[in-house]
Image 1 (cartoon, helix red, strand yellow):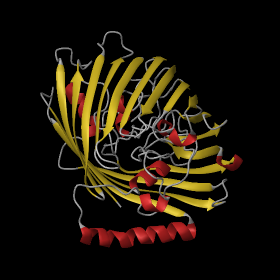
Image 2 (cartoon, helix red, strand yellow; image 1 turned 120 degrees about the vertical axis):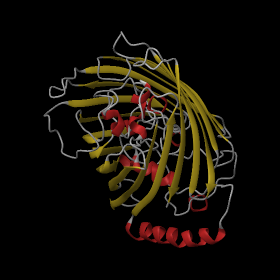
Image 3 (tube, one colour; image 1 turned 30 degrees about the horizontal axis):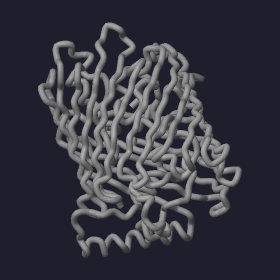
Image 4 (cartoon, one colour; image 1 turned 180 degrees about the vertical axis):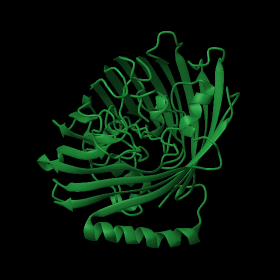
Length: 434
């Protein structure tokens, strides 16, 4: 879903988030006032890792840990839980014997649009995802080397359109269903990640999404939280899609870190060939602060600068900008407030100026979650009016491995439909994890 190219065409295919180093971050759901339990008591398999994570919520290592957490669903199915327990025991043995961690999930998103400019007015996609992390060198040494992979099968479900392309039916610049495209079989990630300096520094080389690492806040996960791209990430950044590159990160102490990467500026999730258009790069660097390494998801402030070269084949000018992001969570981890902003120059990003603010509330520990957020953005074309986006969702943990999330988006003053004041997008997401 690159914002770097024709705003809503390639933006539809992107994962929007990836780069820096490895590690797994702390759980938003864990209540810091509770007695600390061993990782095995909080997880089905035991994928939790101590950590100084610099990756974002949708990076492979982070998603493995999140999907492995024990939940508090509204319904228990003891017979089904017993069947799944043998599966989790198998995954635990594979991890213990070989350092091989993997996950499988299936996600469905349906979205319906009020008063479309053109038909169709609804969209639905299913995404089958298989992903993993194989610690091949230096297991338990603090300087582990891992092979990371992630493969999707994205397909429409009985509709003419995917949620990633529904925005155009409202005259809205952006994406209402982030990651839910109909790109079919795609290689999302394939990279080597190496910890050094006893885990305080890390390198990544291979195929990844820089948006999984730049300006990370703990709420930004399109599989489990919001769906609109402008709410989840920073639409003032002209990100490439999943692409080949190299990056790294370093903790100077328990509070300050630095990270960055250089990627193929023309990368797209549907094409794995590297640098087909030559040496055109997307590069960025970020400095951030958190009270402690383990609180980086829940309490964090970061500032980043970025630059993208002109793309000659696509006839897209170069661009550059600055981002600011922050989030803070109450000590019982039931409330999180977040804010992000961006300023850029050039026509490649969705917006040249943008600001997002919102709040999350954990209804029950490691279970139901409600969130609301508002984004404002000013497009590079001064003849287009500013857009405002609002989204609210409620994630219901129906069963141990099943979550159901209804949502509602308000698209106010869509830039490409000057005669339209408001369009509404209703969404329903179902997520099954194994």
